[in-house]
Length: 398
Ligand code: LCS
Image (tube, rainbow, N blue to C red):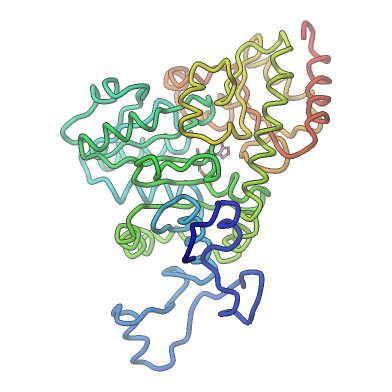
C-alpha cells in the first residue's frame, strides 16, 4: 500500500489485497484451481515466454497464495516472499539455492531436529559441510569461517533451548566476509522480531506455528530483501522441486495472520505469568525465556525482540522418567509437538522433536533428558497454573 507506512497490526489485515478487484469480496477469495485458461494460444505462449504477466499453473503461482506472499513480505520488512508446503520445504529451498557441492555452512549451535537432518543429507549427498557453533560474539564466529563458507544459518530463539543468537554480531560478520545470513524466525514470529531490518538476507518460517496459530495448517515461508533473488528461487528451486503451498492452506494462513499481533501479545503475557509461577516450584531447576530478567541474554533479547513470545523451556529435578511423569499428570495442557497454537502444548525434546539428533550433539545443544518445552497458548493463565499445580502436587517432593 502507498502513502504513510502502516503499522504491523494493520499490515497483517490489509496488505497485498484490493477487494474492489474481486467484486468487493472482503475476505480474500480462495482460488482453488490447479490451472488457468488462456484467451488464445498466443497468450499462453507469451506467458510461458515471460512476455506477459499472468497465471499459468498453480505450481508456478496462485492468486490466493500470492496475497499471503505479499503480506508476509511486508510484515517481515522484506521485498518479496515465497510460500511452501512446509517449514522444512522453505528451509531446504533456501539452503539448496545458496549452496553448491563442497560449500560450508555455519549454523547456530541449536537448530530444529529436521533441519539438522537436512544438513546431514546435504553433507552425505553433496559434500556440503556445516559447523554448529555458539554465536555470542564476532570473534567466536570468525574462528570457524573457511574459504568455502557461504552462509550463516541460525535460529533465535533456538528450538528448544530458547538460547538467543546475537543478530547484530552475526550480521557484522556476514557483511565483513560476504556471507549470506539466513534466520529461521519461527520462534519469535514476524510480529516480535524482524531479522531483515537488522541486516539479515533471508528469513524462513514454519508458518505451521504462530503465523497460522490455530493448529490446522502445515506450511512454510521464505522472505528475502531482494525481489530478483526471490523471483530466481520461484522460477528454479520452487518450480522444479515443487514444494509449494496449497491455495486452501494459504487462505487459512491469511485468516490466522490477522490476529498475529494480539495473539503474540497474549502468548507473551501468559508466558510471563507462568514463569513467575514456575519459579516458585522447587521441582523446577532452570527456566529459559528470552524476556526473563534473570536470563543472562536479556539484553540481547531486548535489542532484537519486541516481547518474549509464548515458548518456555525448563528443566525438572531428575531425568527422563521424572519429566515424562510430570507430563502424564497434565490434563488441560496437551502432550504434543508443534507450537504457537491457541492450545498450550508440552513436549519432551530429547525423545520427541530432537530425538533424531545423536545424543552427544543433543547434549552439546543443551537438550538434556530433563528439559521440557512448553508452548504457552491463549487460555486463561489461572487455568494453566491450576493444571500445572495439580501435576506438581501429584509428584512427590514437588
Ligand atoms: N524451523 C523451526 C524452528 C521449527 O520449529 C520447525 C518445526 C521447522 C522449522 C519445520 O517446520 P514444519 O516443516 O514442521 O512446518 N518444529 C516443530 C516442533 O518444534 N515441533 O513440531 C514441529
